[in-house]
Image (cartoon, rainbow, N blue to C red):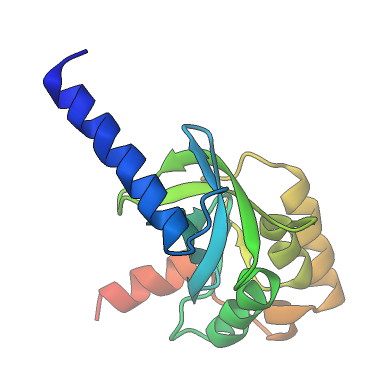
Length: 169
């Protein structure tokens, strides 16, 4: 084993021991395709911060796009995600990384499939260019037909259009 790898291993062990001693959750785990930890912050309706041990990870919910904070229904969408996950343990099935360095994935808080629940409630759109789950489109159609959430507005503007139009100003 090289000296550099040995130092990294020793630092990792010391960090884990120190985290446990300080009371951090050391049962959380990270693998290349899965993250488990506690949700400590919600930025908007499709982005949260996950604490895994002592490391924070920005998570972008995959396949959906929620209204921006300054957009109509943005505050309600953020509140919906917070009510489902904030302060709770979460399991992230990692799909990818986005251009902002966030981990993109499918989020479960308890028994709830959060990505699907936000679409079902009408708190997010299906992000068709990034969606890998066809069942989300059925949930969106049902939310729209029932006038749930953002679909209670006469003509809600999808976030990708809102961002495009806002950036032109």
